[in-house]
Image (cartoon, rainbow, N blue to C red; front, side, top):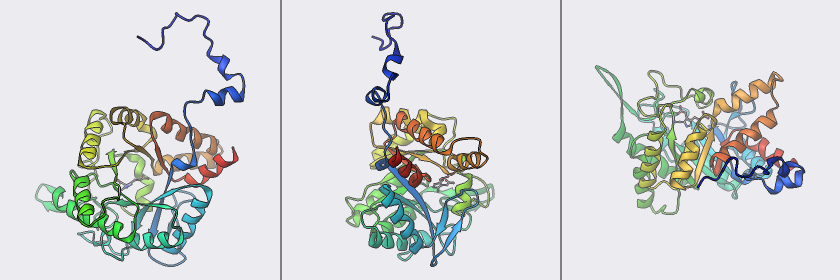
Length: 335
Ligand code: PBG
């Protein structure tokens, strides 16, 4: 039976339910609230450092002390969680900065746990910020060109995740898209006794032009080639579901779709198909485009931002990762 028996109820007038703000509120299907927000933050070593990111107005590379300050303000505004990205002092072929005990993310986690203990700290697990070539895995050059070595990369990702947990991270979020990394990370966390540390996997991560500004922010633009051998083809939706299924089988607790706004069909299908906690990542260019148009006076930044995030909720996202999290939390309080 169709839910919409067109013609059967000629007297049905949808506008009846829009007559007053109270009625509109009563029949509202989707809620946007600060408790669903995650704020991504960029950390690099130093003291009192706030380095602006040109393509992302209002976003900075922060030293751990400044990061703690920023995170405290976010928490104060009502944002319950942050997602950390690190920019190391030195990059090398084996991405050592990603898993050394006193790496920049590990230091930042300790700062946050000391200064803002209530805040949920999620760490991005990837190698691209830490490799000299900017790829998300170990690279071997061959006659036919460079190759990403999937399996040797898994061990390093697992070490990185474990070092974050050891520093006190509440959750780890692998974003590399190597095959099998959720299992490798789960096994390593369990082996070290972190049985209760959840994994939020970037399960359906597309090879997207919307990551442009992030690569400036994280200084992780690949020096050669691109990420299409490990990130997904934007043309594929069924493959996204297979990727998500795999990550769930390997032990992911939360699955993420990324980017968000151009991929709401994927968010909806993932939520409907698996019923798992689902996160949508409104990535850097989604933020920058709104900022740029708003600066020109062409759009209403607040209205566009809230409407976009509401759309992600409507599509099925439980968790919204956005660079606008603090502003959004404040706007929601004013409403
Ligand atoms: C690292 C990573 C990227 C983003 C999150 N984690 C960049 C990439 O894959 O190139 C992008 C986030 C954003 O654009 O805001 N693998």
